[in-house]
Image 1 (spheres, rainbow, N blue to C red):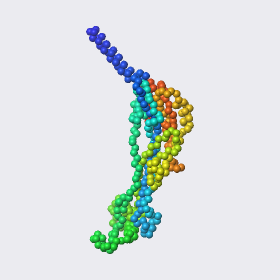
Image 2: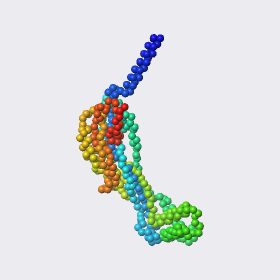
Image 3: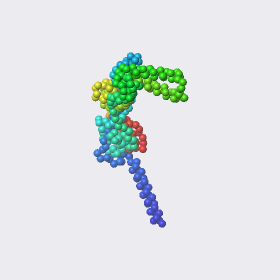
Length: 367
């Protein structure tokens, strides 16, 4: 009996010691962890500015009867050739992060086991489970010039193109002139307008039984009239496009950055296409904030440890000549300072997260 009691006591003491050892192992500080041989290479991010541009393409196709617009309908200044116009309708700016080739470091010793990196090697956290930023691949396709649709004017006349006998019976050999066809189309427009006016004035004996049918009838009349007027005045076709451009400042140059090029007749063009006017990105760092950061001694001191960035707020402007198309206040890493974390934060008791686009400290917590 005594032997059994002694055995059970021994087992309980050994189990308690194993639990304590496992608990201590789980919470081991960084200075007790095994050092990584050779170290871990990481990069700090540099901030890129992503410019989202929305443009509208308007193509005006000249009508086949444009030469007779003033004579038969009294319409002046109709286009005599196809015209294409582009307009910037909206611009937005956002930021993203990418590895900075000028800010690559190596973490050695015990702290190297606690680093969290992105899939491209950017430091995201220390002793912390950090979610990978969602950097979607964005592909921009430059719009092509519109080609006139084959059916842009599917019905250019309500009447036969052959004068005299009924052409559906393949009789008659005298084709009407182009001006005669234009005169017929103009006459049809006048008749349709009169019919619409009579309908609105309720001069017909039989009207549609409800208001919805009445509305549908007037809408269809407007559509037919517009289609026939376009034979003289031309037809407009509009399309919208969205394009994205990435600009990464070097931290020194704040002017002369070409975001993209734009032409009112050719639309949005790549940076290297000199046929368009350059849309410039101008960056104005907050000088006072930069001076305050430098005054704290950031960037000085030990050459060992883990580095992070203290970004600077900048005023970013998109300029078309002297016209400001868009502006925003953005934190940019390159215009700031690189400094080291205090040694007291690297003992494994703290969890640190960094902003993926600027490298700034986002959060410091305890485990």
